Length: 512
Image 1 (cartoon, rainbow, N blue to C red):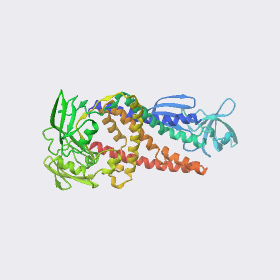
Image 2: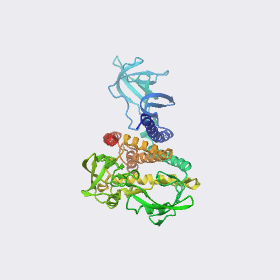
Image 3: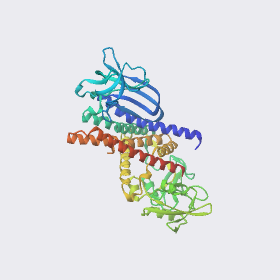
Image 4: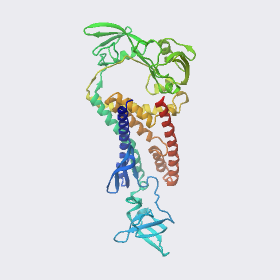
């Protein structure tokens, strides 16, 4: 990958991921504001602040690392004050003698009154008075009333507003909290539908005829009409797919209508053997030999390389693509052993394969036969209305199937197959190579995935918090904030470890 291409792909990756996560956080933000929850900050990006602007009680920030974003809601993780009994603090009063600033940083000189915290209430349940009892330097104890919009000052020019009950997330009704949590994933789903609607308008509806619109196969031409495949008449794309699914070699005999005459030719095809992760080459002088032209993730991770010459599969010699294709179509075992010749050296690699059931669940055939052509498109108003929902539904189905396969021992799919940021970067880069429409479709798919992932009933995710809300709704008892915080933090650490593991696998796949 060239430096310019690498930089361009990194920028695309950051834009796509930041868009999806920021839209997710915007959903939380809008419903939190509507419910009267205090939002400390709405940030696009992570890390050091580049620019921030305060409007009302909320700071709107753009941060240095353009990767995601977040919403800092008051009371989201319990109603814990930033002071405790015994703390040494400073306070500043307003013109009528109420506390407007609670100074936590002892190095800040601007402190009107200093003392030790003896008692306090900065939550003010049922709109009760907020106060701080301080033991002053002369050992007297004095109570100071606190304004409901007072601020903690923890660094020079850095402050955070206190969270009284009425502006806290935890004080809102179950329905209000449900909407705040659910609208994050919902915004991901809406983003996906909007993107897919744009795709349907820009691209149009795929034609279902047998006329070639674009081709990468040198033996085919734009405008060719495919009338037969291996002697079977083909009148539309469904006939073509049906005929290709029955071929048993790396070439096919087709009849095309070109420039007013019928021509019969034998042309090479690409065999994508999804289950065993091997792709042949349909071009070059050695196309009939078993040189590998493409690899799946598991085959590549095992050590196979593009350009290897396959000699044996499971100890049995193979010499033609027909033999390899037959093995792939009928393969039932969980693992495969492939022997290859590389630079005169015989090497053997073993790896897990994707089961037929796993591929079927994902809507993928074990073997795909590609002639190397595309049909045309046409604008269809009805299509623009139903395509977004159709594609959205297939994305949801695929995601649910993937989760199920992770817990199915015989599927060949495991945690090691998940993609983290590095893997998503590679996927975005590959989608970008397919053009604008390909990138848009992948972005929509990724947005659906992130929305669904956040709805999984796992503590620390939106779905886990919704489970806690469900418990509260059924039992009429609130889960203690400390317990919920401990559970969320524990699962957050586990998710972080999973994130590290998946990212490490991404890096290994990138280099192999």
